[in-house]
Length: 155
Image (tube, rainbow, N blue to C red; front, side, top):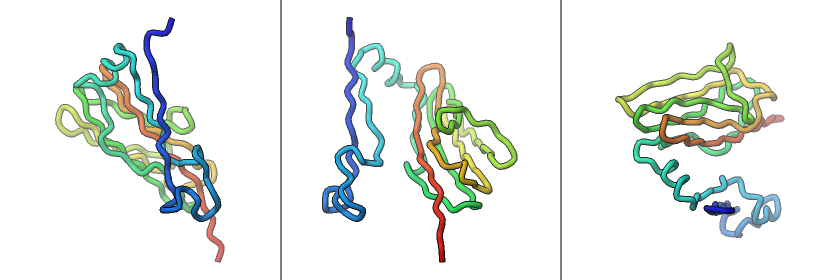
C-alpha cells in the first residue's frame, strides 16, 4: 500500500539563449548539470524534512568545479539547526577522513550554526568525482553535492 508520493523535478540547465543548443551540440532534456529536486508528499516525511530545528545547509560551494592537477581545491558548507548540526564530507558515497592531503576546517557559530571547509592539496587525477557535505542533527539531514573533474592545459 502506498501512503505517500515523491515527486521528482529535473531542474533544466540551459546552454544560453539557444535552449541547450549552444557549443558542443544539443545537451538534451536530461543532459543538465543542475541537481534534481525531490519533493516529498508524505506527511510523515514532510514533518521530518521540514522540522523547524532540523539541520539545513544554507550556503555551499558551486555545483561543479574543474581543477588543475597539483592545485588546491576547496568546498564550503554552512548549516544551521538546533542543536548545532554536524557536517560530514563524502566522496562518491564514502565518508572522508582527514589525512596528509585532505583536511577539514570547522567553525561553530553560536548554538545553531556550523561552517565547514574541505580542502585537498595537492590534487591528483584520483580526486575527480562527486563530493557531498551532509549536515545532520537529531531532527533532520540535509546534503549538497559537488562534482569535480581535472583539466589538463597544453600550451
